[in-house]
Length: 317
Ligand code: SER
Image (cartoon, rainbow, N blue to C red; front, side):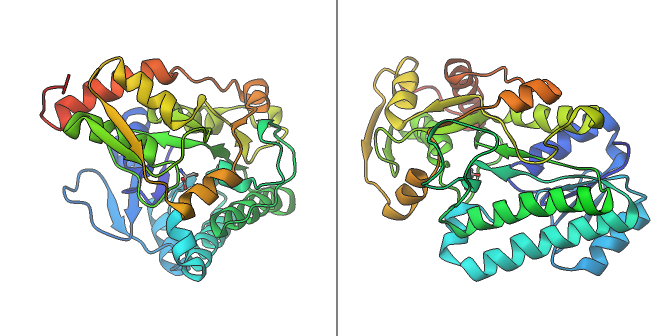
């Protein structure tokens, strides 16, 4: 990775990934693109709707990119509200990004998700290679995307790589329209109001990861020796698995008066119920040395500290 174009650079992952890539590879070597303009422009930025193949090609060529990091996509709950739009954006954008990578010989990264699994997938210690019959449009997009990335590697030799991300938690950019978002909202509400109403039911386990570990995983996978990768795309990676009462208990250690109740959202609950409880990351560990530094305890300390500063509030205790 020397000259990198990032799509969806203002999104949940893209906004922090762009900063990290610029720290490592140099500000002028990372072109951030998104469908909307950033509030403050620093570093190279271009407007790009990922369904516009011609503009994506021209921007990549003019920038002399050698790497495409394709992040632009709709998350699970939003995709469920508008499945046709999700198909057109998620699949149209991915096809354009893969084609540009083929034409310009770019190394390629795009994330898949725990959403690529479905109710018939083994729920615990979910294997790297297993049944994938997702019941959401997001999941259908992710499975098709995993297959397309494998296809572009096998058929055209494009150096495609990817991971299945779990729910990602960060104090920087809030997620939008995901099922795992509760695990971010809960920290904001804990600091701001000392209480939280969870839309996910008690006992619903999902995989999660703190954003710094997710960003490092992208860099490590892209820098890994390609000859050692047996899977290339869609590596299971997870840092922790918890259910709402466990994250609440962890927050309570720091904010003793914190209270949580539940008003379950049937749409997002059904999505969560169709996903694994905890996936097995061992292929990623073996093939490119994946590791996560943050568990629930360490992440909670960092999230609360950073949010108190960000939200300019003293802890409710
Ligand atoms: N965080 C994503 C979502 O909830 C999962 O990939 O949609």
